Image (tube, rainbow, N blue to C red; front, side, top):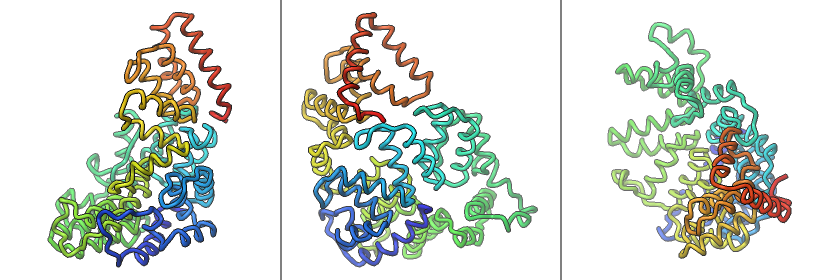
Length: 441
């Protein structure tokens, strides 16, 4: 299921449920209330294999947002949502398998789900897969051709693309994609434009618009053609044009159209308009509605820009008073990710390290490497290279970097530790792995 087609369906439900309600700024929004009337409605749809509802409820159960924290239920919902074809759930599930915590680290399963999300054009997934292929990270085989192909696709499809190639190859990918600012969109000239039009998709039409604008033409008809083909970026651009003209209602309508077609930029603009961000104070006819703002902010995160499980939660709750409370609630239930997040706000160095130890003991890779770094640099704890190497040995098993970077990681410690200390670190790492058999599958 294409992520953007699904988002359009979600908007229809969301507008019916939410658009007419003015919500106080300090309201406590439950994540499922942004899209459904109540928990029962969301659960009913999830039980009918609605992939979006399953993913939203997975977030709710992971952090106890309107429900009791239930990490097993959260994982079950994430898996079902991914299996039912929701691209962001597939991407987030790959992250769980790569980073550990809620699930044992499994590089094969992580890669398989990442490929599925990339096939659905989830921007973050495409970038991650291209990075793995370019450098051999997470145990993925080196495949420069795949990395290049994904880079070209990123530049063809997205307004803010990311590429994991060298500068020379990235420049070549931009040119092949016809990314504006290099050689001009699709290398189209006025004389040969009609030759290719029958083959144009929405992105081709939008690139054609950029081409003409770069040469001083307004090309509004070309922009409308791009919208008719399904380009959210084109609709968002029309919104900006009307905003510049001071026609704010038309701008709002086009932003909504762009959001419905999956343009993250339009979603974030709407979030800022409904929260009356200082950059959008001219939209005086639009009533402040913080629920709508929270909804669009979450949809922006779920669209894949930025697309991580972390940003999905944190952006969804950016303006909520209870974000820290939800993280603590989830941490108390043993969520390694939440333990890691709240560690940065610990009152003392000792408390920070205790929280990191707890997150690491639950197999969360970021916490494991953070402990190694803290012990190596003597940050928040007495410097101890042996313990630092112990945690590094454990973390490097998940192959988070290229083989060459992993080798350099070992060399770094070999330069400061004697043989006895290296052996001691290896024994500690081995003992830890025996005590945590579910760290990796």
